Image (cartoon, rainbow, N blue to C red):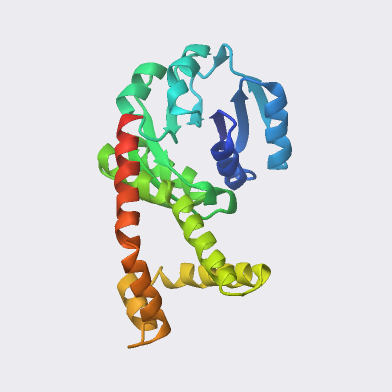
Length: 252
């Protein structure tokens, strides 16, 4: 069984590890053994735990899951040249990672929190020698998509990486709207969850505009609600969210 070495033990690392456990031997490197113990408990399976100072990464396959601002500090604590780095760091360039970790083999990846249930949409780019390995590794936690440039992965980060937060806002707002009109909270939540479950299947096969047209009868309830969203510039707000997230990814 191949060993994957996680550098970092935050929420994203845990989500990915949830998808990989049982398929790979997992070892996790962090700064605090108590937090590593908590990581192991949350994961629900035994892992190999190491403190970061002077940890030897020579010829290891690394999954880098630290904060972008901590790259230099983390790199200075490790020793050895890794075989390859699969990085989940938003906006952190291949060039910077190669320089800091003294390796020529880097693949940038951008999974999302759905990795924990095996349904991540993960975008990839980097060293094409490791393209198939990246698809296999990250494919264990959901769908993968290889992109041709770092610009594209920064845009995809704004969409698929940050997207769960945007959809969570939509879900919460829809449920709150139903409660405002008099539906019990538990019923609003149940209806919202059922909506997302069904829509997730439909959107795999049907273009969004066709889904909209299929629901929107002339003079009907959907048309009235849709007009209210347009009045609130909902479409423009979501497009602006992608732009702002992309711009942020470029300067991290």
